[in-house]
Amino acid sequence: MNRRDKADRIGEILDALYPEPPIPLDHQDPYTLLVSVMLSAQTTDKKVNEVTPALFAEASNPKSMAALPVDRILSFIRTVGLAPTKAKNLKAMAELLIERHGGDVPDDIDALEALPGVGHKTASVVMCQSFDRPAFPVDTHIHRLAARWGLSDGKNVVKTEADLKKVFREDTWIRRHLQIIYFGREYCPARGHDLSQCEICGWAATKKRIAEESRRR
Image (cartoon, rainbow, N blue to C red; front, top):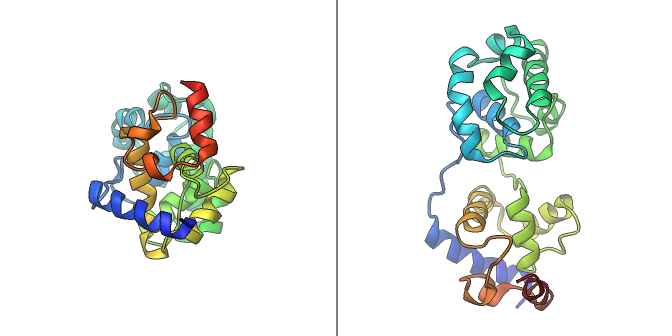
């Protein structure tokens, strides 16, 4: 089975499991989504959703975030990973939104990536979830499952993103991104996973990955 046929079959299974996958980060608008995604690096979505209500109660827009001292921002997000760096980036990001974009989140991926603390994955999430622009953000779940299923060689996330965009139709990218994340969390963990019993790995996993997983178990 070639990669595109495999992707089509995987897509059918994912659509049956997650016909309308929700965005796991709580937010109200493009700005609060941007902040939440920035906070989510090396942190669970659950933890981000725990800290953002208090943060957004005081800084729900770029102007109010830019007005806060870094230490005050840090006090809200201290329990997330890399909190000191993220606090500095949130303030700098808000200041630049005001300076360059009139306080609005730009619907342009290059402009987003130019913001402090905003990498390609973060920008891609905002583009597809806030502006409905086709994008395929690759997180750790997607990166490992793409390799496990033989849809990419898994050398790096840039290659994985390019490979997935080739095998999945563009009009499915936004939901596939979320569906694969949910599948990885709920059915297809990184360790201790019996590939033969998995609804997708049972037929899609490559021989190389099956051998590697068997050695780990």
